[in-house]
Amino acid sequence: MKNIKVKYFVISVLSIFTIIFVWFICINVLQLKSETVFPGPLKVLNTFFDKLHVKAPDGGTILQHLWASIKVAIFGYALGALVGVPLGIAMAWNKWVDKFVRPLFDLIRPVPGLAWIPMFILLFGIGLTSKALVIFLGSLIACVVNSYTGIRQTQELHLWVGDVFGASNLQKLFRIAIPTALPMIFTGLRVALGTSWTALVAAELLASTQGLGYMIQQARAISRPDIIIVGMLAIGAVGAVFDAMLHVVETKVAKGMNIK
Amino acid sequence: MTKKKLISEQASSALAAIVSIGLFLLLWFWGTKATSLGLLIPGPIEVLKVLFDGIVGQVGKHSILAHAGYSLMRVLAGFSIGSLVGVTLGLFMGWYPIAYAIFNPLFRVIRPIPPIAWIPISIIWFGLGESAKIFLIFLASFSNTTLNSMAGADNVDPEVVNAAKMLGANERQIFTSIVLPASVPAIFAGLQVAISSSWATVLAAEMVRSSEGLGWMIVAGMNNNNMVQILSGITMIGIVGFILAIIMRRAEDVLCRWNKSGR
Image 1 (spheres, chains in turn cyan, purple):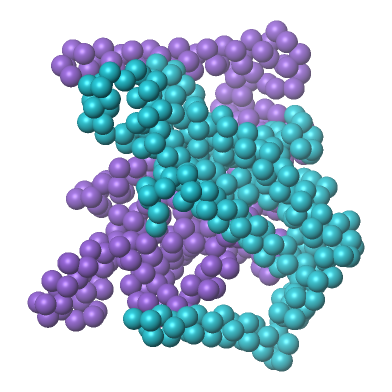
Image 2 (image 1 turned 90 degrees about the horizontal axis):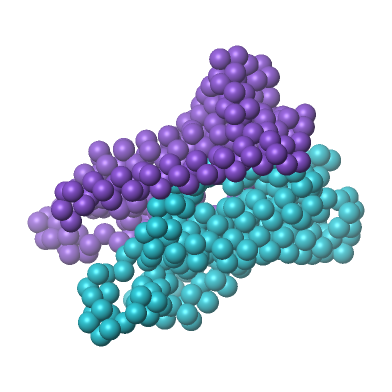
């Protein structure tokens, strides 16, 4: 069994090296594409180390852009989660909240968060507010939908047990329904994180003065694909790190619930 | 629940829906008429009027329906290629460990990059035309479908597979008549995520560079300081998004009658 695992691991490592090698051969040796269109791996690596301390051509090092993006993303995301999770729980638990809020919620739900970008930019300018609002909407929807489904999955039998032991409505909610829903709530938080990050990049592409999305958009305007690829990899890496962090929290909080 | 109770329950739901949406519209109407908010945001009646005018007449070069048509065509092209490649690759990755070992490293690098972040590079690679947009939607639908069909093929009940082996099925038969059908619910879950992600991506792509489509419509509204156009565009985007979701759900109901994913 162990041997097989080692074998597949070796194949995986070989595969990634083959890809980089083929990339290198195609661009640097055969020169199938000019490096101003599709830069080779060495150039990308070079640009990455350059961007760590050089501010040209877009007015910031990669870390400055990174920080600018993360700040906005976390702000909007946290706001969306703080409103969305309780709202979803309330909608699932109380039928009157459900009846009155759900129609409004269904009205905004089919609109992708980033379709609001032009409106918010007109209303609030290109600063923090409009970006945070777009992210807020995106993460709100994901959090509400998943917490709602989570609470609704509570087994009636468990609630009856609560009734038998004389639990109050709030006790049933906090002791039975919310623990049951925790895995779904965490799924919602992770989905929301993904949408937030995407929405932020979109907002920065459209109108912004800093951030990773701004960096790659500027690099496109001056035809520097090496910077674009560095930026894309940075965007992907940050998304992956966020997701991994949430996963760690999930395994700590929702112990033994849906650890895969 | 008795029938009478059920009916009164439905009636109160409908009433609550009418009341809450009505209140929202009234608040919107009042806010734009009575306060200075009206200078910034048009009221609901104006938005509906512009939406209607746009359907009959034109916004920019085309009617709103034609804009929606352009966006949908792009989604359709990218989504069908992307989901075809994604489902195939995902099934192979989920079923054959060797395929997983080969493709997983690359997939792990590409998946966390949002499709929207590919916009600048795709413009450099493919220019401003249709192929750049189709490439983006391909990416948007590709990673979601791959991930879900991979999970589907990975979670096939081993007992069923062993039963088939015992009855003498060969590798190919196991793959086509057991793994494939068993993964269909997971594949549909992936397709649903993929279609909504594609819809968001086409809007972003059109907002960055385009001369038609709903994304162009709202961003042109932004550039001309035309809030009514933005809001009617958003309304249309919501309607199309809603219809797409319904179509996917209906397709799932029809094709997997035996196993509803419950979404």
